[in-house]
Image (cartoon, rainbow, N blue to C red):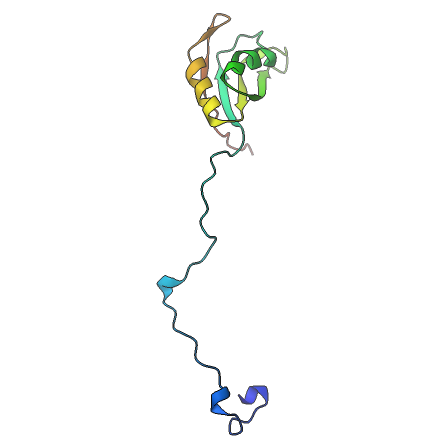
Length: 127
């Protein structure tokens, strides 16, 4: 108490702060309180392989529209010719639509080609 400039002989013992209660380590919770898990993390992107070289993004939208709201559809083009490289991506707003499209379109023959449809995987960064 001298650090505060008080003389311990002049301080009333009843004014002294009471000791803090003991806290067990297992009772300490560090972090953010748990929240319910979100199931909608944004669009679900599907890989679509086996496309004909004349396939366009509009074709992909038309083929996948019956399964749900198509957020985005792209066909990866060859830089030299501008024609399809044989694959593309379709994004759906809901996981149920993406799952239905995967089941409904995988192995389907379109323009003489058998489509391969599955959930797109993250591409590792190129350095």
